[in-house]
Image (cartoon, rainbow, N blue to C red):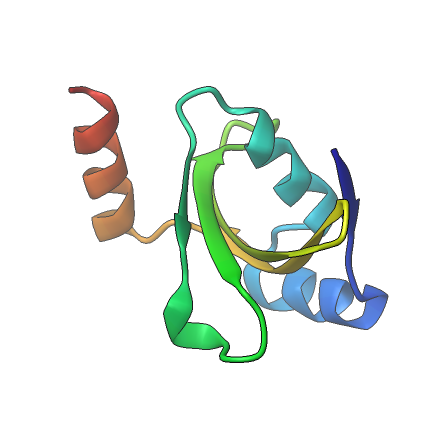
Length: 93
């Protein structure tokens, strides 16, 4: 799996959310992670949201799209408390 992103967007995301896009790529390796469509944020392209545990042991939500064979990361942040509780409840089933 190959990833790409805009370096300026990645720097802005790191300052705002304290999650690097490099860390965000590791969420895709979480076997309990979940990916769902995100139709609310773009009419021009299919977008997705993936939630999972990063390599730094943080629950992270990643917005991304597919560009050919690559996954383009749009944003990444840690889950809110409510999102974390919902994720943990869902993965406990």
